[in-house]
Every structure is written in structure tokens, then in C-alpha cells.
Amino acid sequence: MTREMWEGNQAIAEAAVRAGLEAYFGYPITPQTEVLEYLSRRMPELGRTFVQAESELGAINMVYGAACAGVRVMSTSSSPGVSLMMEGLSYIAGTEIPAVLVNVMRGGPGLGNIAPSQSDYNQAVHGGGHGDYYPIVLAPASVQEAVDLMALSFDLAEKYRSICMMIMDGSIGQMMEPINMPEMRPVQRKDWDWATNGRMGKRERHVLTSIYLDPYEEEKTNLRLLERLQQVQANEVRYKEYFLDDAEFVVIGFGTAGRVSLSAVRAAREQGIKVGLLRPVTVSPFPHKVVDELVKRIQGFLVVEMNTGQMLEDVRLSVKGRAPVEFYGRPGGVVPFPDEVLAEIKRVASSRLSLEANPRDAWFERMMAMK
Amino acid sequence: MVTTANNLVYERPEGFTDTPTHYCPGCTHGVAHRLVAEVLEEMGVLEKTIGVAPVGCAVFAYNYFDTDFVEAPHGRAPAMATGIKRVLPDRVVFTYQGDGDLASIGMGEITHAAARGENITVIFINNANYGMTGGQMAPTTLPGMKTTSSPNGRDVETQGYPIRMSEMLATLDGAGYVVRRSLHDPKNIRLAKKAIRLAFETQLRGLGFSLVELLSTCPTNWGMTPVESLKFVEDKMVSYFPLGDYKISQGVAQLKV
Ligand SMILES: Cc1ncc(C[n+]2csc(CCOP(=O)(O)OP(=O)(O)O)c2C)c(N)n1
Ligand code: SF4
Ligand SMILES: [Mg+2]
Image (tube, rainbow over all chains, first blue to last red; front, top):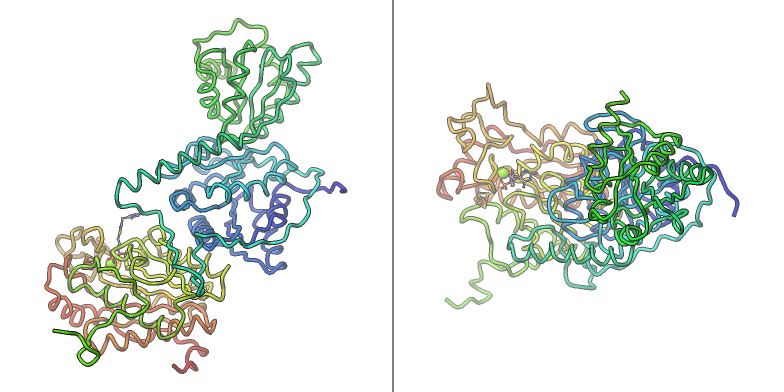
């Protein structure tokens, strides 16, 4: 297969098409708009559904409808738009149907800016919409990985009747990279035993709702969703590891922060520092077990994120105070340079690390001292 | 009395499941349900119909119709219906929405579904208040009308004026069939049924967005008897919300049913 140059947003759009996307509903917002624009041409060309919705509320509820009908459907947006979609996401979760959403994150809160950011980790991973539910969340670090995860997103969403969200940042969305685009897979409309696509003389009627007026029934539903999370946790954890075998220190970062960290880790290795990188590809389910294993044999962690320490809390949850955890973040749409992360690695490798210190507070103090 | 074919006055339409109603006595939601079920049955499309229930007293509409059904977030039924209809264009897709659902929180969704000419049918129940939450002011509450959130009567100076949805939506080129009917007496109920039939025919022939607004009662929250509330619709609501055909596109005008 020959490698072709693709812009990230257009690449995931085409990857979704090739994974059998039957319907797309979206609304313009930077840095995601190229997905919408690309599909406005591509979907009709293939006789598939494309609608530019009146808002992200409209878009996500169109997704909800098409998902109920049992087709492969997705939407894409960026942070403020995804906030509007939270209502629909909660309903989709409560109805237990598959849907795929990509958040090309930007700096926030509020209108923020349009620079690459990882500020919506908590919103994506820890719910976001109301109620007890747990989406699957994937975090690619390159255009190729985003493309590869696109088909997986649909497969996972369908397997677990769950939301699968891909969180990437504007730099992956708008960067051009040489990639291998997967082959076109035929659209396969599956005859789900839950889809509301008309009885058509074949079966009893189907009803899809997120209402459980009886609290005991809602409780059962909540437990069912939790059970599914546990299956996902057992079967679907994905991560990339670099130089972990003999590592004394481990950097943990997802998406672009992970990619930048890899450059820094390589540079540190050249300088003789035994450091490795763990890059979660699924941030939900989080690779807790891997971190748990590492705790036993390393001297400390450095979490690197493009936010003020959101995944940091999940790392601390796995570490449980058994190893020092340090943090370095660049929030607000600032992308850290490899040199900055390298300096952090050196600092961590040469300091006396404490088990008690709060990594975010310590980082905050260092940040303020620099300003 | 033994029911025989001769004295049978009520029969459950095939379009209904065997479920006792949850609506209050005298509420015309039930009448509207029946009309829709009868029309779907008469048109022979129950098998391929997918309904979209709202948030409001009709939230449980899916319990009654013997068709596939989904239940939308408050106001978003037209967006959900769009998603379904676009991927299943040969199915019949309808929403059933109250006035709070459609004319307030769902104003964006209904307006754009109509503007896009979505080939769906909307049954719009205008009962001048938010029934389900206990009778608060709706966008359709009449000037001076008392509700639990306009206790001194709707003051248009501070609470604005009612919205005439049919008239508004009729201005959109995507709308194929938009009419207002009432459910306050048998004659009007018959006219309402005809309109519902025509709305679904509009959809079947691919003639664009269709909506039937039905003036409806809410005896419970209006604090009236069922008979008084029918009278209120006839005397007070019809004058503010005139019955009539607001949009009949050329294609729909040629339909014969
Ligand atoms: C997002 C959201 N906001 C508010 C509510 C509460 N709520 C439930 S029903 C309803 C009003 C429904 O009124 P209407 O659409 O007129 O229907 P009716 O009950 O009168 O038939 C409201 C505000 C909700 N369920 N969801
Ligand atoms: S509250 Fe009003 S609208 Fe709701 S069922 Fe009772 S009478 Fe009907
Ligand atoms: Mg109402």
C-alpha cells in the first residue's frame, strides 16, 4: 500500500466512510470543520446521508435517531460544540445504543480559543452528560492512529452498545501526515434485535427509550452499564509503551502530549537517563493494570498533559501513593515543546521525589515562579 | 350489556396496543392518539412506521401505538425523526409533540426540520400550557391566562405574546402541509382526522414536511371539567389560534384521499 498525505480531519472522515459510515450529522466549529466539509461532498457521492444540522443539539439528536435505526452513524465537533451534545450523549448512553463521536479539542473553558488542547479529558472520560454512564474514549497521537482507531470506534460502540468517543486535538486534526488509508469496507447494515426500523411484518415492535420511571429498573440499568464498563475494562485496554523494559522513570501522556513526550524520552535516553513512556490509547478504559505493574519496579512517574492535570487523577488512582507522581502541563491551547518535557524528565530523574507532595500543586508553584 | 357487532360503539384500533390510558379524564391527548392510530391503520403503514415521542404528557405515547417507537429528549423529536427518516426513507416517521416541547425548547429543531423540508409528519398538541410539569405557562398560553407560573394571568408586557406556530412554520418553503385543527367537538375531530390523513399522505408521496396542530384540552391544569375545557377551546383558543390551512404546497393540493 502506498502512503498518501492526508490532513487529520479529512483523514478521519475518509476512514469513517471506509469503515461503513452510513450517516453523518454535524455543525461547523474550528478545528473540526474539515470533517464536515469533506463529508458534505463525500457522503452524497456514495449515496449516504449527510446533514448539516442547525446546532450541535440538532446534530447529536439526529445521530441518536439514526443510531436507533441501527446504522453506523457519527458526528464530530470541538469542545464548545461537544458541551452542547452532552444532553444527547446522556440519552444515547441511557438508551444503550452505539454511536461514535469525535472531539477535536481546543482551549477552554468557554469560547476559549482554537488552539490544540486536551482540556476535555474529564468531560469525555468521566461522563460529561447527566447520569451514571461510562463512554469508551480513544486518544490517538497521530493522523495514522486516528485513522486506524476510526474503524475500531464503530466496532467497539456496536460490541458494547455504547458511546465511543475519540478525543484528539486540533494539531492532529489539522496536521498533514503520510499515512496508509485502510481499504473501503462495504456498508453492512446489521439486523440488530433492538433497532427501531419498522416491524416490516417480521417481528414484535421495538421501543427505544432512556426512561425507567421505576427506580429499581433504573438501578438495574445503571448496574448493567457498569457491568459493561467492566467488560470493556477487561477486554479493551490499549496502550503504547516505549523503553519501559529497563525504565527507572516513566512518562505518561496521551495524544499529542504523549507524542511530544516520546521525542523528549528519546532525547533523555541519548543522555543516559533510563526513562520510558506509557501512552494510553484508550483513556477509558484507562490502563490501570499497566500502571499498577510499573509501580512495583520504577522510581517515579511524570504525567504530561495539555491541561491542568486531568488524566493525572486517573494515574494517581492506579498508583495509590506507592510511587512518586510528578506533573507537567501546558493548558489553554499551549503545546509543550520536547525540550520542556526533557527538562522535566531531568528534573524528576535528579530530584529527591516525595510520595506525599500533591503533583498539581507542586507544578503550579513551578509555573507561577516561571511567570 | 353484552357487546355485539350491532351495539359496538368503541373498538380499539389495530394501531393501538392493549394498554390502559395514563391520560387524565377528558384530556384530548387520547383523542389525538386514536386519530393517529386509525389513520396509520387505514393507510396500512403500521408495519413501517416509527414514532418519536416527546417529553411532556405524551412521553409514554410509545406504550399505545403498535409501531416501533423512540423517546426523544425534550424538544428534539424533529432532529431524531430527521436521523431516522434520512437513513430509512421508505419508512413512515412521525413525531408527537406538545407546545412546550415544540414551541419553546424545541423551537430550533422544529423550525429547521420544516426549513429542510424533512419528509416527516408532526402531530402538534397545543394545550396552552406545560401539562406534564403541572401547568406552567407555555409559549402558547393565552394573554391573561392563569397558569402556575403566571399566577396573575399572562402579562404580555413582561411575559411576551403567544406564538402561532402553524402560521410561522407556513412561511418556510420546506413545509408542504401545515394546518391547525381542533379537538373540541365531533365535527372538528373528523376534520382533524382528515388533516392527519393528508399529512401522512404528504409524507408517503415525498412532498416534504407536514404538521397538524391540534388545539387540545388540559382539564386538570386548567382547573375545569372536561366539558368546560372543551368550551374553553372553542370560545377562547380558537379565536387566538384560528383554525385553517396555513400551507398547502402545490403538490399536496393535488392529493386526493
Ligand atoms: C431538558 C428538560 N427541561 C425540562 C424538562 C421538564 N419538562 C417535562 S415535560 C415539560 C413540559 C411539557 O409541556 P408540553 O410540551 O406542552 O406537553 P404537555 O405535557 O402539555 O402535553 C417540561 C418542561 C425536561 N424533561 N427536560
Ligand atoms: S395534565 Fe393535562 S395534558 Fe396532561 S394528561 Fe392531564 S389533562 Fe392531559
Ligand atoms: Mg402543552
